[in-house]
Image (cartoon, rainbow, N blue to C red):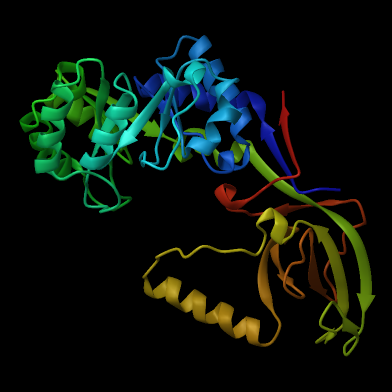
Length: 358
């Protein structure tokens, strides 16, 4: 009676191994809701990849608060992607030597090395994302600072690149000029932690910079790259036959025509019906937004639930743990207890159950 993610185990594991084999130095990313799988499950799977002999020595999490959930399930290094700030407490001593901090400001680097002269860290260089990171001059200043702290362990430089069409190679080449100019300690100046590069771009960079080590941080492509290995289903909890004009739901709306109301598992507590801005600016995307707005005005909004291959309409906004759908007269009516397919955004969905088959 739940919103369930069912995973084809052999197919999913085969995909994970293929990605790990194709990306030497892979840094799996486990953050947020664990891409729908939970953080603990992803940490265990990263450990499985390492135990299978893949070149996986570090696991990336999003925040310091996520460390406890993964630290006991993964025995390697732990990279925190959110840059360290002075108000963040350092991990307890037993965990501290495994944690690699991301440092994106010169002032924070000074403070971190004051608190922990033997801190492990990567220096983040600002990219066209304009999110976090030091400028080329600040990176040069940071190089001078870390050279004066021989106990510090600078694990490299981080580049967080945007999702975009076209090649990142021109930008990365410019950024690497700054890295070389910063005159960082040997390993720090030649280990580059990167995100959002294609396989072709990584291959080109490795050919161009054979003395550099590129460590790709990969989340979506790794965990969700084979969507056919994943299926999301909801349970039909109730079915009601209705006639045009019948009142229903929290807001006592009236049914526009005869058919059936279905109550199915999955609601706002799971992330159903909640959308993040997409940033899509195409004419087609704008037209779809206008169409959804028009449907909403008359009480018809397309839901992510599909029955017999056709997306069905919300009868009203989703509730916390269940949703109500409208099926017009003539449609096949599922039985109570039957499951229906749901299309979700995995990074924004909390499943009741995750079932890995096989």
